[in-house]
Image 1 (cartoon, rainbow, N blue to C red):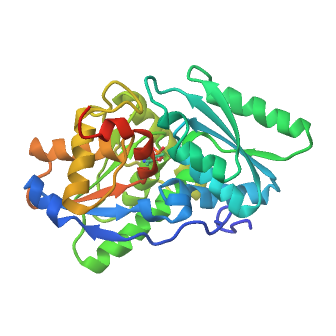
Image 2: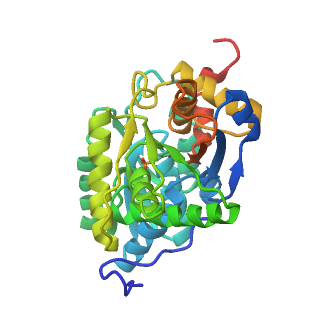
Length: 335
Ligand SMILES: *Cc1c(COP(=O)(O)O)cnc(C)c1O
């Protein structure tokens, strides 16, 4: 499975439905009255309800198999989409899976603690370890992995969000996939907008789209960190990913942190508006934690005139709509 071009790296295991569709959003574009808006449907990657982690897992799981791992260990919040997709990928490949889930979003209700992503994690047969919100996921994963190893297993630890160079390189490939689709349309995109969480998706896309001529700017709407911290994180991942695949590029890292609201996973009014608008104009499901806030950012950039008529904006849909069911009270008509 070793990739001859890049010693120390591995080919992918097929897990995702690729290429994902590239679709126009004419009614949403009309409703906002500015740029032409398109969507890259990585919510349709197929694995376990889809989402961006399926692409990363194609590389990460290939590395796990190459190392003869028999158990996957990863971490996230209780409603982690990454945990859900990892549990499904492990099930599909016949590997055991332990999920370290931290209860890090305050004030959530019953569904948040029992349904949606968590319900699916259980369905995929994952061994679920619940931790308090203050727990350090990296330390907890190391401890869990050590206890599995002590029992004679071969654990493979995937970092939060699958965001290391191995995972992020999947989004360098995804950038090439988009470039091919855009070339068929004959009109390049002026901007790419996405949600930036653990940063691997943003890093891979920025690195990949920097190879386009002209380079396409990638605007990350942060869903957790302040701008400087998010930028630094993405930049570090760009460097390690560039080193892994053997390219030299230095894309500008653009992060807008105005749409996080009170914190990661906490609803905002702009997110509610964005989720509602996409649903009503396009029948398109977003999610409360990532793409809803990213779309809120896109809407604000249009209203501020920073994305305008003549621009052709690609919204990179990273999935997550399973989590809508964990936030049922937020979307109820009367609150
Ligand atoms: C994980 C996730 C993201 C963020 O991707 P990162 O690579 O962690 O920045 C965005 N949207 C959804 C739905 C996700 O699950």
